Amino acid sequence: MDLEMASRRYRRFAEFEARGSSSCYESWAWGIASDPQLLSLIDRLPEQKRQPNLVFAAARFLGVGEVLFPEFKDWVVRHWDALAQVVMTRTTQTNEVGRAAAFLPVLAQLTGPLALIEVGASAGLCLYPDLFSYRYDDRAVLHPVGGTSGVTLRCVTTGEPPIPIRLPEVVWRAGVDLNPLDVNDADQMRWLECLVWPGQPQRLQRLRAAVAVARSRPVSVVSGDLNATVAELVAAAPDGATVVVFHSAVLAYLSVDERIRFEQTVRALPCHWLSNEGCGVIESVAEQLPVPAGDTPGRFVVALDGTPLGYAGAHGQSLEWIGHRAMCAPHQAWISD
Ligand SMILES: C[S@@+](CC[C@H](N)C(=O)[O-])C[C@H]1O[C@@H](n2cnc3c(N)ncnc32)[C@H](O)[C@@H]1O
Image 1 (cartoon, rainbow, N blue to C red):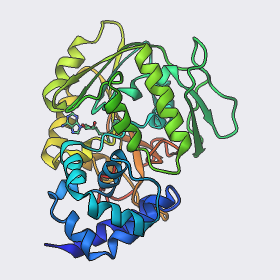
Image 2 (cartoon, rainbow, N blue to C red):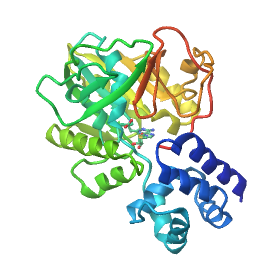
Image 3 (cartoon, rainbow, N blue to C red):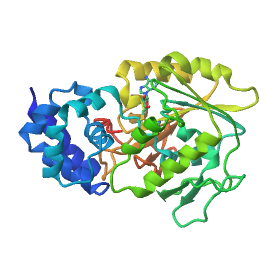
Image 4 (cartoon, rainbow, N blue to C red):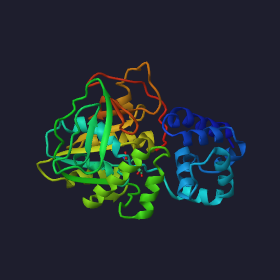
């Protein structure tokens, strides 16, 4: 048993991830970090199942409200078996469409029309960047050609990313996930909703609106491992389209060897490779990053064909453009998503 390690993990989550984003999760995480009873329950779970985000989402899925820590603790102790069962059968598959705001400036610079392939797509909600509205800083809102979809992504920028004046044309989209979520399955969508942190009503609203978009324009997200399927998906894309294989918050779930294999595979395919991952997740990208003064865990890097172009907030809420300049040193990639 290593309660100290579990305690550190929850403390780190409280301090670097939840603080400023969800006061409820912050207080639960601080509470657990110094509670030997809950730490030893959590320690019974397999290592990869002890993530705060997973444990908290499972508790909310089973009905715990946004209560103070003592009540939360009492609830967890009483419902531990049911909670552990949800933790063991579900995974953190947060599908955050806000990340499309970090991708858009890059996608819009590519010669269209585009064929998009998302690996690690969850429910596939990020496959519709051409159907969302965007507001960068205080610029005018950028709307899709066919009218608004109810999803407006807001993004604060620095370093002058090339904000497009129109959205790219997407003629084909496909995805793969180890466990694709079905936008028409109410139980699975409720799980996705529980992965949105308490105190973030805008994220919840935009998730629901994005689910409605996906229901109206179904895409195929196949079940499988990204390394095993990416070549097949690229081969299936239509002639005449620029193929873009993209991913966000995915490669941290792979071993280092699997990440390298993916990079080698995708670099050899006739496509662009667009990534948005934690700073240290893709070694070849991380090597090009200088160490910025304010580097903090939880930042993502947007890279095209392995070249870092900008730092993104974990949910696409910010984009710090660095163009072709290189950026930050690798740091521990925490999976909390
Ligand atoms: C945190 S979610 C991110 C979903 C989406 N990319 C987004 O940004 O909203 C990570 C997803 O990657 C999937 N995943 C993890 N490892 C994978 C693999 N080896 N092959 C395919 N999908 C994988 C998980 O099932 C999960 O749905």
